[in-house]
Image 1 (cartoon, rainbow, N blue to C red):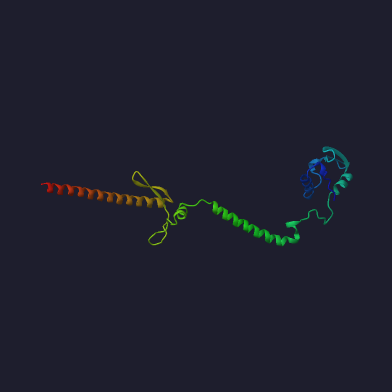
Image 2: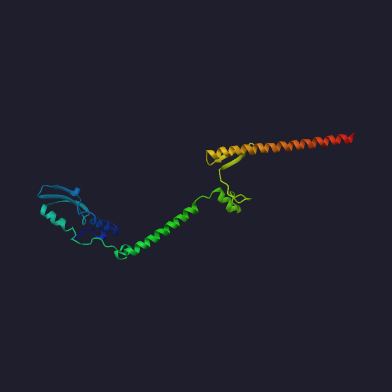
Length: 208
């Protein structure tokens, strides 16, 4: 089994290995390099490693076949040998090692993904104040988050709703809260007006 590789002094080790590895998967000459064949004569182009130039050569069919089969390995000839973690002797052990390694890498990636995942508003509040905002302080039950309402021009408006049903429910609740707030404000103003009137009335009686 012959491999006509370039000399190491003329090219890098990587290029030599790439050149030799091509023998593992294909023939020594590509079909597009054969320029002429008439049944007796073969004309082909090749790259001369000594001069580093492309040349054209003509040979008889018998000579060409003789030169070609020198590059064909004999039967049972091993062109590839595996070493290190690729060795067949430790193939079973390495499968277990690689399986455990992949599981560990997967676990690390999951942990990194969790660490990089942005925290929700609920998690940030619980981390900062030590209180879960979705947990009722009286009964301990958990609220279901539907959305966020904010105050705008003295009224509660829906800023974010989880879905259409949540938005409808929040609008109704905001309306109730607004009506109750208006009612309390009216009662306070009414009570303040009565107090003022009572003070003025008692003052008038005292002066008379």
